[in-house]
Image 1 (cartoon, rainbow over the protein chains, first blue to last red):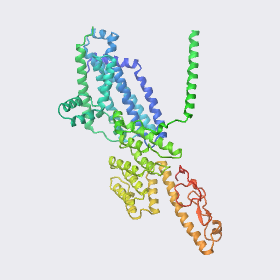
Image 2 (image 1 turned 180 degrees about the vertical axis):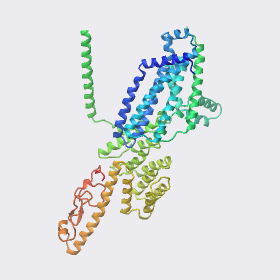
Image 3 (image 1 turned 90 degrees about the vertical axis):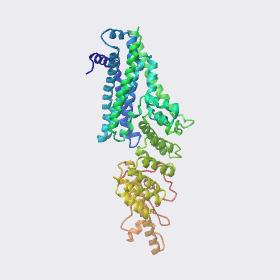
Length: 259
Length: 308
């Protein structure tokens, strides 16, 4: 049962995001999917379904990551700048509850956003192929993994936001996303390296978030099944990793001098 | 208030006029012949680098590269063909980014195999491409069929038979692959084998373009057979009478034929000087080996009539 104070902060964060016209990206997404659905059959050969799935899921992922980073980095600093944080913390709200509430609020916004974009993907798919296939269930799995990506990015943006300026937070979060997309390569490099380099590379490979395992877009676009084990392990990984990052954010924020 | 309206009116007018002028200027810019064709170069030619740069979204990038390949081939083809320098790099990038993109192998193999100016005329690369496809999609029998077809096109009947045989051993394969393997091993160069190949191509696809291509080849085979048979008949007439018939009407009225022979598009065959049998509308019947009027130059872009 979620603490009511966290719930209030989360609800307010969601409302604020909606008020900031975050969901306007859905219009851009709808236009993109409509254009893709209509045009792709005319400019390419035999990849209508593939393009709709690949483009749709990639757009869901990138739109969400951009929102997660740019809203996430301002979650703490904006409250400090507007001095609303002092009002919140003067009430019986603990700092960790504030961080947790912000995290759940932004994650909730992204889930709602993804839900509407998923409707767009399926609508475009229905338009292009006139029917759904059994393997299209995989698209739901890919969407779930994309939400897991957002959860990590939100946690990271919040972490950086707890001690850094918005611009640096954005740079750090974005670079961690880029490096995390190369997680598999880094792990391969670590396996080949020896001595101190090997140890450092292995440490880095386990420290950075693994976004490559959360990207199954190409796989589901070809109707290939995603193993249940991967779904379970990825879920557990994201929960544990996000908990670790949020704990780091709480630790820093608890000690931060807000005067 | 009035001033505000004036500003709105002036800004709106400038906006509309500027946008219209920009569109007009862009149209003019498009008409200026480029010094170097941008289409003729790839900024990044390494598939590995592209795979790294796309941050895991290689599926979408492969689709974009495949669309670019189709646009490149279609654009050059409609302009009368050429050397297709970028075709192989584009196909290589596409399939390295997404090794499961089956249309890239199927159509790419055809684009690469077709002789210039209709295609790149590079069957070696076509074989390399489709073999890469079979390695990454070992359960897809169509790729073995496509591979066999490329070998068949090169008159390499032994490898064609091998590819058919490998395809026939897959689960969920099409039964005709086994028949084709045997037919290819025994009668590789026969017209009947060619007919079987194109008929099978027609039957096993829903793609209208592939069906039209298969139909055009089947019509060409039919014309080859018709012309061979008719010229034999004309020769027999000559042996009997000592001269070639002037027209087919002459042969019909003498009882040698029941009617004027028609090509697969229901146009009458014509008899030319020296007993040569030719088709009336050669542009409507691409891929002909026989039956072309003397001096006829085939169109660079084959006219593919709708399949029926």
